[in-house]
Image (cartoon, rainbow, N blue to C red; front, side):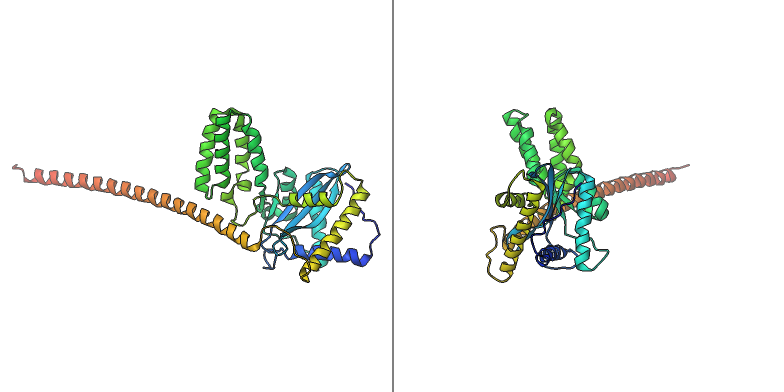
Length: 337
């Protein structure tokens, strides 16, 4: 892996300012410190067509006041694998330690949003441990894309049924409803073996993708792809490593200037989801979960009541038999000898 060296065309002070501004934003995402961005997720993805012979690993978050995604870090690697992504996180943590003054600090967002590439899980586990790995959630847009592709293997009617069952798996608000949705999909796949590998693959990853395992405020898609679109509109594709470094310096300085102007009241921000709309979405998701939890409780109470009735019936039957035996003994004792 090659480590990019930025051209020394900018002053040390300006490059240092960019370094601190991005690091301070990442530090404000710490979920344990209750700062402005402590409820935000970290979006990580790899852009494949930006630089010749290299792939760009990018890290983003959503700024709820500016209503747009902001880039926290970028690194060009030759391959998207566990070792290179581990190096990315180690370097990023090194930047945060340098700025915070805490030699043991680790990036600590509410969660990570990525795709299902195994390297993401391996690298985050290596650097952040099982606590970091358990916070990874994956992109629902990619899930929907796989559903659409596999639906083409079926006839039109079966394809629509498959898409409906797959959507029920994704959106089930509780684990009881998810179990029901998975059972229906499993029965469908037994009759349509073309899509059974798809179900097996996603069922193993249901804790990453299904909303039954997600917090209500968890983003549904990986916003890093929105950031990649912004990079494409401002930069170029299939450029050399040096030209890519130049584009990154320009992007970083532009982003820093936008944030500075916004803080001073001179920039209107983006057009993404507002804080109000995000709270409303979280409320709707919470109401769905509450309804699902109520059904789970009703089912549990019903099961307990059935068990109690069965137990009482058993006890009554036993008492009836005991009373019958006692009466027979009394009758025998009253018979003349």
